[in-house]
Length: 351
Image (cartoon, rainbow, N blue to C red; front, side, top):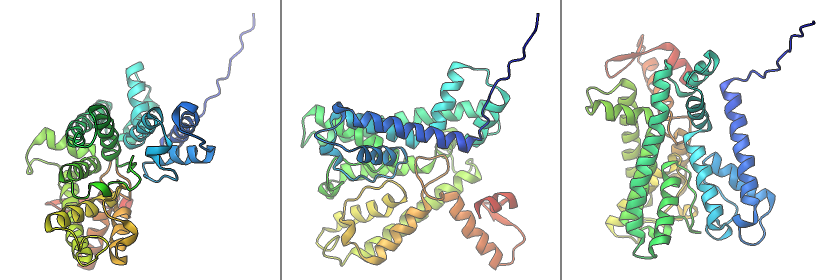
């Protein structure tokens, strides 16, 4: 009797490769679902379906069609699902599914999960992944309730609820998809709606590790250096951008000049915080000054916190690079933040 050793063909892929393939798979699946007759009104080309799916999965907020008119309720639900997957990350879903189906993960899978989530143990990975989903559902639910109440002034309950759910998912995941052709310009004077949406994308852009740290410690002194750095930088960026945008647009008749002081403040705040990834607008972007557009591009480049739903190079990377330059100019031997030294490895990774 002859025994034959069956050679198993396995494909060894790095976490970034798996991430890229996962997003590609989501994009293809989304394209197929959006192309179904029940997903859209009239004709929708494969290219437009692909563009919408790609934009939703990569949470860019760009669209070549009017989302509110081109897609049916089913199509909009598909877009919501793609935004959720894109915002929370394919790897989060994959790791959660793997841990649910097989609690005993192999060493390679454990290492991959730890590298992806940025944790040092599998227990912390599990807690982080579960926290990501619980926090997302919590804030999206709160946003849905508030926006439903606000939109019931214009629409019936079912319409208001659907709009609220869509915008909560789109805002918290920094997706920027809108069901209205002019984004949120029709609600430039609706404080309840505009401020709620701004808080959703700001919270989503802070980062889940920071949110969990806040819940765990409930005190500024007890927060980790990373959380303090992220929160203080985001607060500083928001305040500075708010003042700059308001100053630049206050005399612009096409944007803020003809508004009341309250409306000016609301919309300056919205456009100071929105560029870092979420993609909405309450003012006509094409009418803003060149200086405001430059500030907007800088904010888009920076983005949000690590392990957040926002894009960009990340706030942590930005502030470490800035502090590194300042430290170098001062001829300091080490980089210190909140009485803690930042390792050369961390600085090098940021650069």
